[in-house]
Image (cartoon, rainbow, N blue to C red):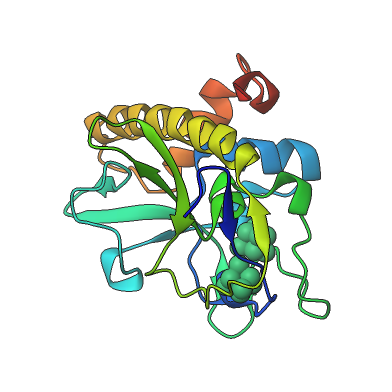
Length: 194
Ligand code: SF4
Ligand code: SF4
């Protein structure tokens, strides 16, 4: 696998927008809400461990509510897929503002033993058929990867703050208030484009 390109082309099978659960960061949610006017209360859902696979029990983004845990995801219908997928055309209706995870799929960053950037390859376990009949320049992916890493750190900080707060009537949806009301006035998603 090359450092600057990967042999891959998307055949638009639709798998990633219909069968894969998309986990946005709060910065993704803000960017989508600000730029499209979509209401986070409508396009998000909070899944419990029975409803999602591939997220470890100690993932730092689990919201702890009483004895239960929840993770923030884009709303998805089992039959027709992501909330933002146009059901007729099968195109993403928020393509310009879609979560970073959607932009990185199905690429995986490779690092050396010293944590140095070594290039990109294709994830083997996310269900993409991984067609090799194209050449994909991966330069822009590295910037996205770094941006996503920073956003994930912010996300973890927010979750820690939420999980520390033991108010009796807390709900997973209260996590939305935490970043929509507290974070939004001081920052905009554009400021987080590093
Ligand atoms: S799963 Fe892979 S081939 Fe199918 S639409 Fe997504 S990126 Fe393209
Ligand atoms: S936000 Fe767009 S690209 Fe991402 S899963 Fe939904 S429809 Fe697909």
